[in-house]
Length: 165
Image (cartoon, rainbow, N blue to C red; front, side, top):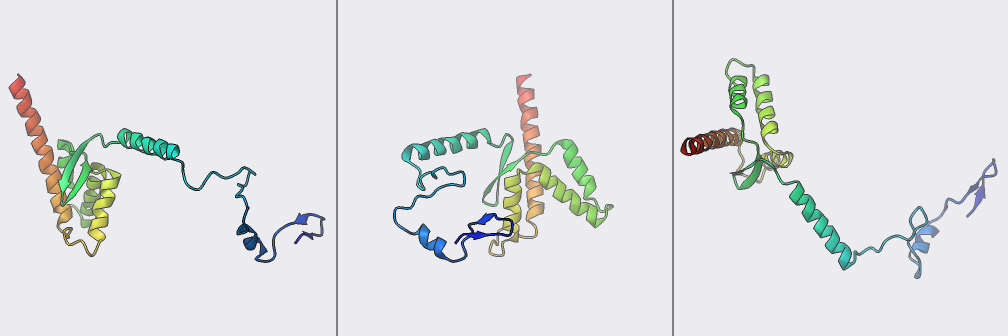
């Protein structure tokens, strides 16, 4: 239905459900807003291969450049903490700090030493009521695991330097 406004402008807005019936008519062609024919709904084999290769290339380019830690069945992407990070963390969570500062320091330490994906994974598992592996002690265990891994890595590097020199 075409209507004319007071200013003489044509308004082709459908006023019934007739438009839905037209879409389902055989022989219709899906057209994009720009008037171009839309791409086929299913990708061709060549398109699927190209997309798969592009995804694989992106995955390789975005590999985690640091370390991995196997923790409670997950392979977490981590950055091993430096000595100064461990010292700052130790001071930040000491009994002389207010509880709010201690909580902030734990959150900051975890955010700085886990990849965004691993950070999300840890907290998603902690919030999952059906995941009995992650408990209220999990964050402490994760912090201990990161600290131990950092100390072991430093010891291995020191031992390698001693053997080489």
